[in-house]
Length: 417
Image 1: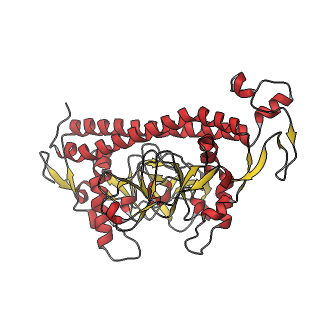
Image 2: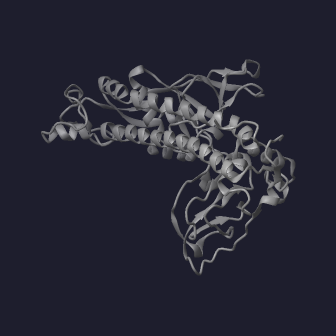
Image 3: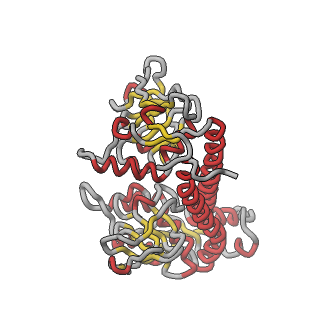
């Protein structure tokens, strides 16, 4: 890395802090394993009894520490401790990196977690022998660390924090929009709230009169229990289908987006990341914008997203489309539902790599509304899905800009205006 700033090395500017955690002082703790952080964020704050934690729960944290996983460092399992963390204990599979002080912690965090640094750490991990690609602090202690003046470090850290905060806000907004869509689906098609309201002589909440008029005012019995009058029991195959169009490696070109299981977050309809399809060496499944991508490998991971663009995906992902345009909304929500994921998990086959197939999913029983109601639902949540898609693209653009400019800014090759 050429630099206008003085260059140092990680091992000279920071160290791997191995502070033993005192369970005597803090018997109730928040245990953080490598899967509990992602791209700078802690994913939970759950309190656990320290006496029953696994043996790797040993390291203590303090504010301004940098967490970086030793296992597969390219997978984004890193975080910055920006809060008092006396009750947090972390796995020994983490490096807990503490600055000696010349490089401010937040600036060092951006140096170590930009994409070019993570790619280098992953390359080092894969070059070492072992069960898993793994790094140690010793293996990266010579990684170059620029040392700008303190005020420049503060300025650059603030600039990149602003980008990260914007990305976080977009993703949190999507989480809220998804929750609204799921709550509406549950109200209409699981709890049948509009029907109950009409039986009680009330106007259904949250909808106009024209939409409310579409719902019946009574129930009838079915094999799944009481259902709104005029509705019927069906199966997933009535509203959704799978598409099996594969592209050979010769058809995979630059500019074609590729989605693998590793790109799909758990329990979120919003795609976070994707790659370019050029250079892939095996056939991939084609999909279109607004298709539902359903991870059939280990379905309990709950990897289901709405595609924000046309592209190709891993053959471990089912490409699902509605059988009619009016079923677009309810088919996506059924495929994402906890009930269907539990059903898929029960039917998955394979001891080490359980998979579910479309034939089993297609037989999943559902309550089928009259088509005008499913169409009204799709039109209601379409604006939410479009906004989610827009936010996915904006977050990806910001992340790409950050990863492009960050190495040049922290090295001094570019200056902030």
